[in-house]
Structures are given as C-alpha cells and as structure tokens.
Image (cartoon, rainbow, N blue to C red):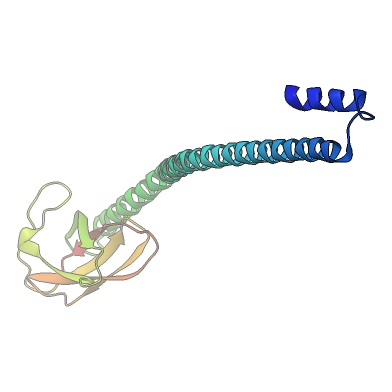
Length: 221
C-alpha cells in the first residue's frame, strides 16, 4: 500500500516529466497491485465467511441433537405422568364406587334379614294356629361361583348347617326349598331330592365373584 501511494504521488508530481512508456509502466503496476489486493481481500472474506458459516452449521447441528434427546426424554416423562394419572383416576373411581356401594349393600343385607325374619315369623304363626305343622330350616350364605363354565352347583344336606348351627335332618321325602338371594340375582332350585338339591344361576345384576344366597328348607310331612 505504501509503495502504491508513493508511486501514485510521484507520478502526480512529475507527470509532465515522464515519457509515455514510463507513465504506462507505472499505471500498469498500479492497476496490477490494486487487482491483486482486491483478489486477496475477496479470498480472505470468502474463506472467513465459509469458516463462520461452517461453524454456525456445526453448532446448530450439535444443539439440534442435544435438543432432540431432551425432547425425547421429556415426551417419555410426560407419558409416564399421564399413565400414572390415568391409573390414579381409575383407583379414585373404584374407591368412589365402593364408597357409594356401601349403603346399597347395607340396605340389601337389611332387606334380606327382614325377609328371613318375616318367613320365620310367618311359619311360627302358622304352626301356632295349627294351620300347618311342618318343620323348617334356614341355611345362610351358600354360594355360586361367577364363571362361564359353572352356572349350577349341587348341594348335599349332609354338608349344610342351619343358621343356629344345627345339622339338617335326614328327609324321608324331598323337602320344599325356597331360595333367598343375598345379591341382585335370580337363583333357581332344581332336582330337589331326599339327599340334596341343585342351585342354578339365572339373570343377575351385580358383578361379583360369588353369588351368595340363603335357602329356606321346609320339611314335607
């Protein structure tokens, strides 16, 4: 740059003293230096820009990779939270259903106890008035399993105990048996014999593992 300026200043001061060949020689040298300098500046700028752009791209890719792994971890965590929230909501719903079912079940038990007591009272009243002289027995809390393969079950009198803890007697004739469901279900009695009977599950409302029921056994004299 210093050389170019010096040459230019010298040429301006002594243009008149220079001949044509000297003038054009200095002019070409000046243009040459300017052209070379321009190329050097352009190359330096281009290389610098490319290096900067490459560095930016590399940093951007690195950040994208780290962000992608972080996003994946956040999605997994969010899914786990949603899964636990769903399980918690199901548990809360079941808890609420159980809480609501307690009064209903208590009313069922009270109603069934009332039925049994009413039957006992009715038979005792009939016996006291000599309208009917028959012995009766109440067996509580028999059960039928709630399975697709089993819808009925045979019960033997020898295996049953009355509500006061007595064994059933041996019957000379098939007794009369009245089923008393302890849940909302239809229990049917079939094949009544002198040694036992068969209970069959009919239409039911409650979803339970075992359908509990009682039976009133009236001796046939």
